[in-house]
Image 1: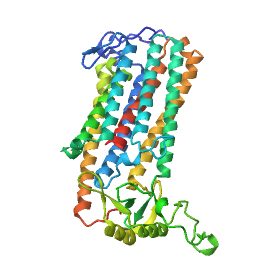
Image 2 (image 1 turned 45 degrees about the vertical axis):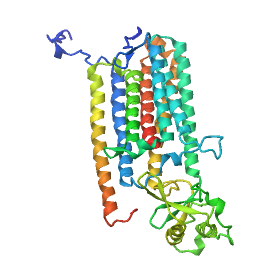
Image 3 (image 1 turned 120 degrees about the horizontal axis):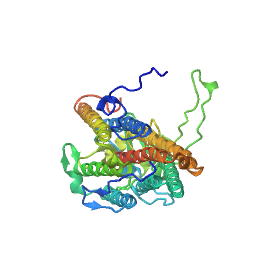
Image 4 (image 1 turned 60 degrees about the vertical axis):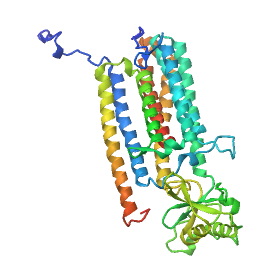
Length: 129
Length: 327
């Protein structure tokens, strides 16, 4: 373990290559900072076009936030947690398992929550029981 | 024991044992498995937040109006800036952590010490910020009244600006008598929740001031809380009003639905607990680095393992940030 491990030094599917692991870390930091700044700016401005238009029951703005979050999560996991350098087996055991279970739970719970919302709205049930 | 057979005849074969298909040490793999299970715990919490939010989707508080404070800037409307600052602190402490891991691979003890120290400082700044954020949220801002049905009604002036209860409530008449055990058979004690003004004071002040309107918890199709006109406002306060709410706790929340406060305390609290344990484990490893434990061991894999945990805490914050403050 004393020797330096071989790191994969390219991000953005190979379009951005770094000379050393340290410069890759700083590069990823810059990418994450830019994305966070964009998120905060959008959160403060809240462009009315993105707020008033919906896709699959969510505002476009919220879709953008979720996609940017997943983008950030990818780079934190792949470069800070060195997932890029792990074997396929370890990576899939961790990522596929959690992604499947989380997506499953989220979809079920959100559909159920929306159903209860409809019941409150159209039924005769008090707001806060 | 010479008779023991030590050769199985399967050496070099795939199932003969001794393979390391994942090429990761036991400790690192266990840290990954722990992270998977912890990620599922957190997503359970966040998904139930989403569930409750979808349940009350037309009456949920708008985060931009809840988290508007910045330390030392009183009265300045600064939505999101402080959380953005906290996010940057945590991302930056992740960077110093991964730099420490990198220095560990190269066996540079002094660099590991420096970077781990910076990581711990970042974690402490984050924890302090979170304590401040909680304090601001608990103390509240403008105050509101809660109706008999459990909804929150907030006060506005004619320009649509929020008005604080203390600015228009009528002065108190007489003295508040404290109930004691001697006066009641079943009396348990005073409630610990004291608003600074009573509901009667607020009602009187509201009726005396024609410029005041109220807005309700429900939102219109553009996501703004619905503002009632003067007549409807009076009817709402007089007929439905029940109690004054200042700040947020687990039962009442002046910003809107109590579930928002419950989830806020629970999820950011659980995340803050992770940051706290992360700082603690970082400190232990930090001292081990200083006394040269890993130098003698020949590798810095412990730094890498605690680094995995620390990055995971950052990863969770990225999601908490999105779902509590942005979406």
